[in-house]
Image 1 (spheres, rainbow, N blue to C red):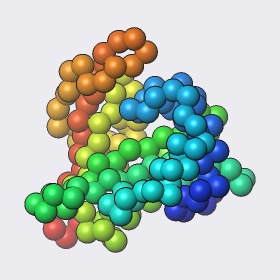
Image 2: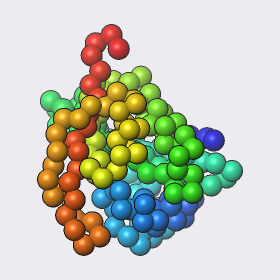
Image 3: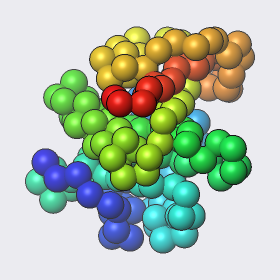
Image 4: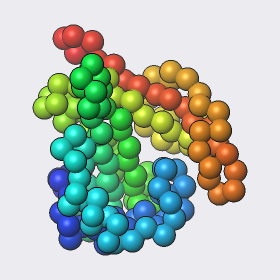
Length: 164
């Protein structure tokens, strides 16, 4: 397993992974992503978005990003999002990706607060985030429209105190 920055050639693998209902259904992505859309996201990614992928056997099977706040008084904060291809879920890929994103946040970007939203009906992702120190901060009712219904999301965050 190799965790690295994405390359334009990864767009096809990312689009394929994000075509799975378990991937787009648990994110804010829409179904039917295209390779061209992901290629544009990779090549036109703004400086405040820090994107990583996980490559396994020559194929990208997971992706995640930290979107650092650009407001001057919130530059110590980033929003986290990630997704793992369904055929490799439950094999530690998500944990490895999350740990790499948190290492980037803690040791290279000087971020103190990492925020995320996770659907209330996704206990596996919630458990992953809790294992890495994220705590529940609230519930957003009717947060997103998914599969014909509004769904709630949990707001979670990990805040590092000085010395951690």
